[in-house]
Image (cartoon, rainbow, N blue to C red; front, side):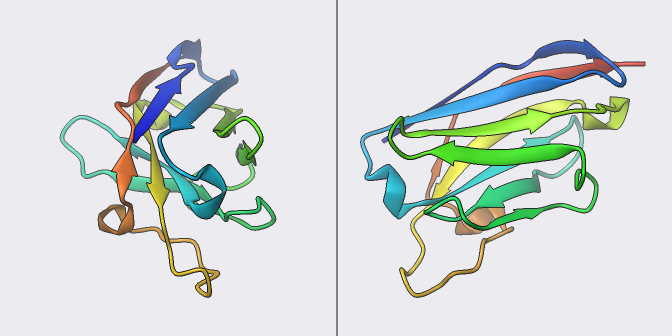
Amino acid sequence: VQLQASGGGLVQAGGSLGLSCSASGLTFSSYTMGWFRQAPGKEREFVAGINRSGGSTYYADSVKGRFTISRDNAKNTVYLQMSSLKPDDTAVYYCAADRRNPYDTTIGTRAAGYDYWGQGTQVTVSS
């Protein structure tokens, strides 16, 4: 299984940036997908998640209203569109895949609950 995140970079505060995560080696539509981030000296934290069909999403309070997660199961790709970026959003962003019980419709927020991880992409927001 491979998750390849891309799209990170340097952006000014108030700007926008889009991340992509391409998956291979798994049945993508069977996995809940999540984005996490980790800033230097801090624990990895949940950012956003999306269920298998894309019909349900969940966001951390810190990004709600500014970030949008989406997925394209035909392209095996999950996206994170970030706007109104703040310096506090600076972190390495990771995508992750969670093969939940098909009858469990919740979106996990714990990193330990995810089965596969991408390599991370750096997002830096300058003030």
